[in-house]
Image (cartoon, rainbow, N blue to C red; front, side, top):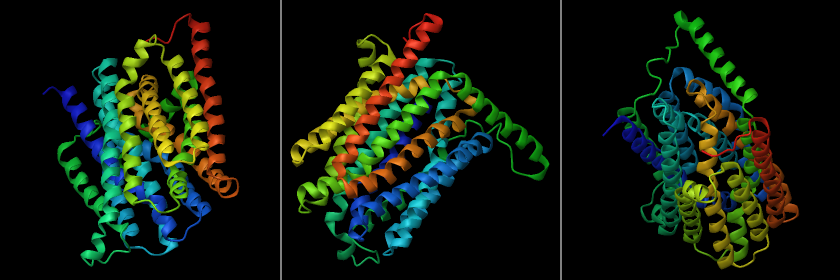
Length: 427
């Protein structure tokens, strides 16, 4: 197997496994907090603290990964996630849940740029854009598949009531999800250490007093290159803005869909329903990522026009979802919404990564994640208040408006590129 295929296979396996673990807790995360007596405002606050922690650590973690090695930083993130699962598994106190969400944010920050960059940098060395597009498409498929499988298992585990049967010293039946997630985190850390080589292991510098000057110079160089990219690339800047809008809108959706289903079913549905819904929307996202580039090329191979249409459809579906009161229609629209979200993701990531130099990839991907979390933080805080006062549907209507307005930015960059160079955005 050549190096390109090996890197793509490893990327898919580890990305899929990483997000499988995340999927284990998604179906029960809001329900776990509701069961603890937290209000929608408190749930929103916890998500805001998670996002705020990511914001604080995102760019420093990306810079750290770029000059000490993405592998080391990713393994650190896995151990932080394991500690988070341990706390949630054992806690019965609100303050410890609050702390766990802060640690969860730290784990996300250290993982966000490092795991993706380690494989992208290996592929980018081939100087073949098709290899990078292939890697992005395959991993964008592997991620929602991992999430879907994890969510399916995560929705099934609580109904087993196995912690009571085995008399395990866990806080409640939700805790089994956290226990299994912790075990899988330990396994993935071990396999990652054994089988994945760092794309920067030859250039990463040891942290010793004798190399402080070199480290400072390298760090300054990475930051300067990242700043130049942001300043000189209108495409990168536009994607920063659209990412901010996406983070705001989807924060309200992902935080409050479980309470909304709880309202629709009046609390009588099985926990497995939440797992099935989570599984369904992640599989829909995976399917969307598979057909993304073929559909884009079928529709004229104009990525920015394509992204404009997809983002507009997403906004419209937010409006539709906000008014649905039946579980069947809610489930159908919710899953189709994530199908369209999956369709847009690989195209946007390909456009983005072509603007990023390998030397500062983790840093710049962390900038994008920083912007995403900033949008998510704002969405969680405002969404928690609006959902409590005006209802969850109203929050989703606000998200719809923001998505539709942000779609115009894709048209702007398309028209700007044509006006300046006379070129199209065809790939």
